[in-house]
Length: 358
Image 1 (cartoon, rainbow, N blue to C red):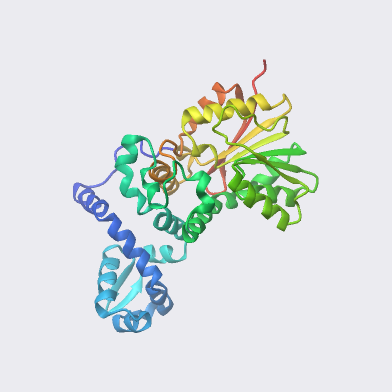
Image 2: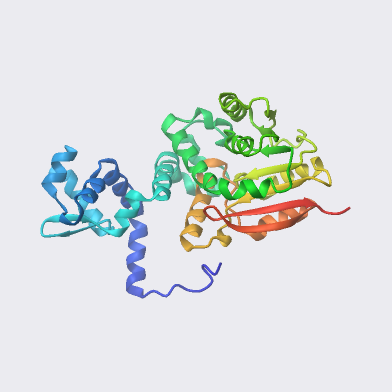
């Protein structure tokens, strides 16, 4: 996509205004969140064209006149609402902030998971470690401790993770099962949502989920609750421990929104060990969101912003990659891309890989 390949066509006056928006961005974010949290945007939306008086909003929220007025004044500057004849009405940006599922999921993820910790971005960049993670605990990375995060943080993390993957499932399942795999190895299977989707789609397939003990415990419980425990097995594995062997001879190895959780050397190690576990009949399917493959600039913006979560909160050295970086690592691991499919779900790309001929 041709994003960011030429200077932006914007006047110096407007560019200066955009710079001020960046300077006050943390304040804007919290104002938007509070306008949602206190139901102010919802009330204004419900009033429609007639709009709301400030005292109406004050009465319904039980906030002071001062509290409501400072939020709405900033809401005007953010173009969330507009004001005429003493009445507030919802503007387009406010409408989408209120009604767009993606905006809601992203906002909750940033507030609950990232907001406090991103203050440590500078230190994270210098040290190559997720220094912001200390707001939740004394951990090296977020992954082994997902089940130990505070409940609201954990909820927002999984809603963010699942929102993007779930939108792709409908398109993916026919693609994944076109070669009729009998044994799928779900590498980094997390809560088992993909494994459950596969067993629901195909009555013959068996799934092995490779993951850390905490994630496997959740995934296998979910499989039991859905009465498919006989077809979903766990394979406990620290994927960063190069001494640990991978599950061997799967028909299809599946990595969804997984490799972006690792640095380039770690990805290469994981891909090499996957290749060593494959047969000539096996295939590896990689699903990722690459910023250069997004159909719209809004998607590229969200993907690049997510990289900062990895830097400050997750592990300090992974990111959302450019597709060329991933294609290079796949080749170095002894694999080749047999099929390359863009525009799946909300900007995902599916790479079907096979072993290079010896």
